Length: 202
Image 1: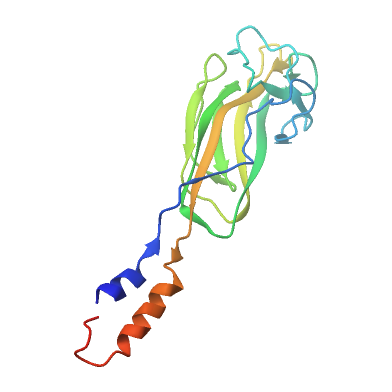
Image 2 (image 1 turned 60 degrees about the vertical axis):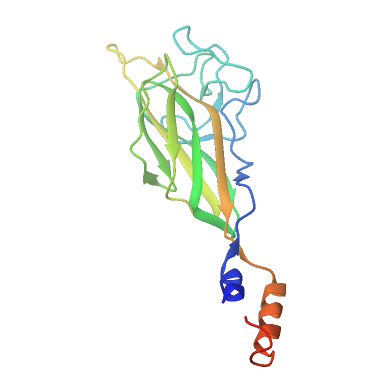
């Protein structure tokens, strides 16, 4: 019976695997961000913000503000903007083990983070500091979409306002679906079954 129990187990000796195609915003120093795009808003062309307002939390070497490619400080009409990035999970990913975390800042407030178009109910405090986020469900094998929704407030005189998104420290991990133990274990069990009764206990 000990042999049978061994065969029934799975090999869980592997380590968690990093999601390699998750990126912070603004990993390029200037121009269009190749990893994020604005999919809804008053303008659908994004770029690294050339002249971030002084009130925004400062950029660092690994993450920069992105926003509408309109003016150096990313001014745009008021309203909601949705920024989207994608990443891939392999067919053998254990979807219950997937976890993504990071920090986000928005101008103005962050309204939601969606995974594959499903709300996670997370908001951000705005642009003076970054807010931690995490996503632990809603994944699928193949291409996944991660969307950051924010609001650009309208001025009293209805003029365009600076608006943008910053994502920093984003990372993700997953486990693979365990494989059965080695076929050698099955072979050993089969040999044991065919031994004459009383010669060896299995």
